[in-house]
Length: 374
Image 1 (cartoon, helix red, strand yellow):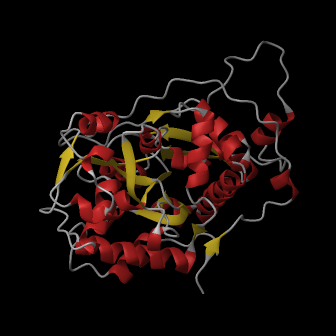
Image 2: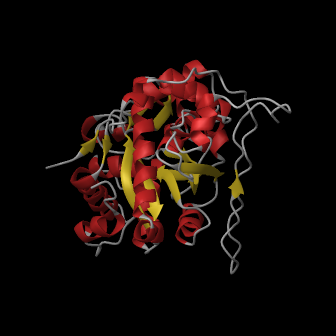
């Protein structure tokens, strides 16, 4: 039977939320630099929790803080875990929510965020070699590096949708077929947006390599490339695409929230293989906490948006909440359902020459997925 995780049970505590003060805005943590040729994997930046600064001498900790330190009131020491994520990606809002609402602590974890903006290969190497214990990222960016054999296992899908392809209204592009012969601005040639919309081009009978031109620009300047006429369309992810779509000069041509992809997971949770083998309970606790946080994002996107904004998220709280509502945070696949989706992605990525044509996608899905919840 396909398995989809919907709100893992959390007991009475699940519905007793602490008050949700808006965290103060902080500057995003600088991204880690990429790996130098021939050198060691990059050192990841440890991210400080947004807060109110040093506590005055003699101040008393709040009850939630005391419970978190004690492991949710169970009197146990918390297990330190380093979780790599991208603090600018709204679709990872479950991570800071899990931290700020005490879900990690409730599962016995003391989670330290590692804000990572380097290459996916460097991130996966950092997880595989113990510089981080787990990470949250986009399936269409991770599957190719995982094919190369990193000791990192996907344990859950987190949500569906966050990729959009926008076109200048003046270009007259209204569907995927209208992109033939056009230039599409992207942030990099291994981006999930290029991979996904390349799939849609192939399905429309357009060669994704020769039928369009993919032109690389800095991520924050993709809209300017279209405005200047250097490209007729752009492909990227929220929050940037959501914000650009508010510009009346742009129209949405396609997204991974429609058609057969509406129920397909977009972002995934992945854990270092050695952690799963040596401390399966910790891997399971982390996965459950993130899934529970994903359920809360689905139930209360405004609260998730306020928390994410405090970690440097771009856009107003209202816009961030609207983005979260537009994404599919209600489905968080695990087990056979998630493996089936990984097989589908694998077959599609083979068709556009991202994965090797010789890859056995069923065996590939078995290798890169780990069931830590059964």
